[in-house]
Length: 232
Figure 1 (cartoon, one colour):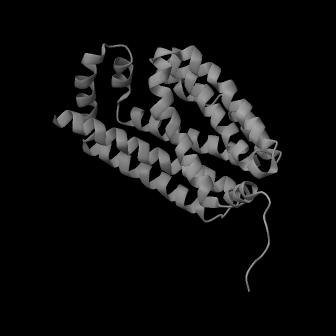
Figure 2 (spheres, helix red, strand yellow; figure 1 turned 180 degrees about the horizontal axis):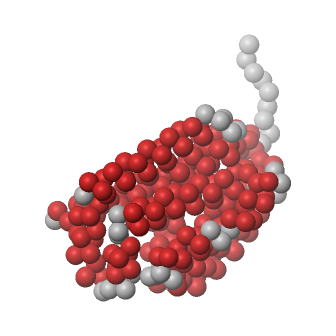
């Protein structure tokens, strides 16, 4: 039998269907993790004030989306992303040569998102932010475990034409047995955690998983790019 039900607002129906898809949330989280890396990071060095101000745009947009039932999920997710953007603008704009305070600055929104999650509000955005922060913590831990922090500090202050030798030295350290062992261990832990969370079949856990697993992908891209630069 043909379904003759007429939908007077097809866009509304599409948004509802989109909001009900866990995998759409996963992909949205993955995309939002990539934005600070590939868009904010290059921009913040030149215009840190603008990046910081853009936080208000993300917050306003998240509020606008959250007020509508059809797009509430995306407003929730975007609110969590706004904390990642805000923290990134502060750290990479003014304090990027101080690795010791990287994680504390990136954690600036943690008390609020934990409180929201505890209250049963903003679960998608909260777990997206926590997943992003966990990925950041794992990356920072690796930098310390393999003694790459010295290169981090130097790369942030030297002239651009002196960056390549520093990256080559860092890659050589990553390729040691110690560097490889730590990489395998951390990737295995993050991968296992991300996959386990997918089994929960909840939007907020898909947002968390998307953030965690994308961290592995982005870090791998940087490693491949640095290795390719070394071989040239």
